[in-house]
Length: 334
Figure (cartoon, rainbow, N blue to C red):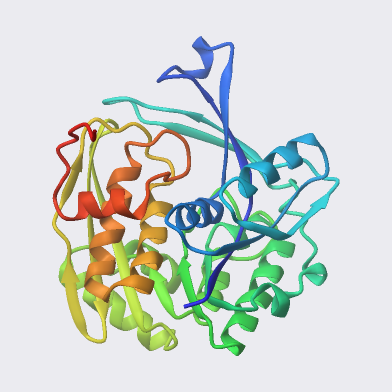
């Protein structure tokens, strides 16, 4: 199926250790991540050939970020450098009834100042079978939006599958564009939609309910308004508490609806990146399995990521398959 290309910010996460709040801490751990990079790293860990397009700071922080990306075997040849600082965010990890909290500092970072004219998309997309993007990137800046738009258009011209997780973040979109309009435009160029009723309602301005019938109606309306979309996969996460989560997947493909069993994770180690783990699991599954098995694999990847500290799912395809087939008892492997 060729290589997989992802486009998005490489961001630094700063967190007090354990479940401490900022007020009670004097030191923090850092992790590199970023929605699309999380997908790329997970796919590379599962053995896929991946390229990532981004921009980092031209300093030792940017160099550290590049070294981190390279450690997964990801092709960094299309990651540029500029004089702006690497984006970052702060995370307080919640527990039980206390929710996690995030504060971002990314809107004037190196990725926000990426130069669209410097990206050779035909070269970047050479030998690729999939191009993955999310709704985070076009919300950061005009430059990121224009870069992504050109990349998606080029991918479609080359006959490449374009997967999208069009996540909407209201605290972005500060540069004058309306998020719903931009996301609808970019989704209309894409082929595989990773999202559900909430995402469809945000993009189309509709009010479909979240139950099964509402999901099916929302999918049909999305395909009507964005006819290039031919597969829709949704991740459902049920939060019992911050420490206990349930995950499930559902999909509509070629008029056929299917869903997975619920998977329960308790206790949760880290919720960040679980949606990215789902997306990576789905792309891997679509390359290697049929659509229904791909959805089950994605749901298992999402569930197992809840047990991994940091933004990235470090589990192999074999680890995820174990969970998918029901071997989730956590016995020690000797």
